[in-house]
Image (cartoon, rainbow, N blue to C red):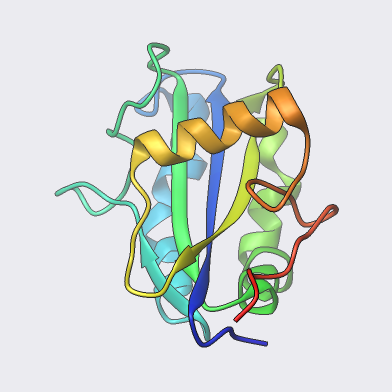
Amino acid sequence: MASPKYQLAQVNIALGLAAIDDPIMAEFKNNLDNINGLAETSPGYVWRLKSDSGNATDIKVYDDDLLLINMSVWEDKDSLFEFVYKTAHKDFVRQRRLWFGKQDGPHMALWWIKKGCYPTEQDAKAKLEYLAEHGPSPDAFTFRSFYPPPSQ
C-alpha cells in the first residue's frame, strides 16, 4: 500500500563480466531500452536514474568501470516487487550470471524517501555501505528484511 508521504527508493549494483560494449554483454545491453520502458510504464513507477543516453550504464559511482548502477523510485514495495519478479524483468534476474559476477557485500538496498525527492548516486552508495556495515534497519533494508515507511 502506498504511503501518503513516502516513496520507496532502490539501488542495485552489478559487476559486469566485461565492459558494456563487449559481445558478452550484448544481450543485456540490447534489452535495456525494453526493460527500462517496461519499468517506466509499470504501475507504481515514479523515477529512475539515467543519463542523457537514456540509461545508467555510463554513470560511474565506483572506480571500477565494470560496476553498473540501477536506481529507481516506486510508490511502494508491491509495485517494485511486481516489476522485478513478475514481469519480463524476472527473466533478466534469472539470467544475471550470464553477464554479472559475484560481488562482496550487498548489491541491493531499499530505503524510504519523502515524496517528491529523488536519491543521488551518493545516497545509493551510502545506503549500500550502511547495509554492509550495520545490516538491515529502517535506514537501509532488502525485500527479505523489509521495513515499513516511517510513521505518518
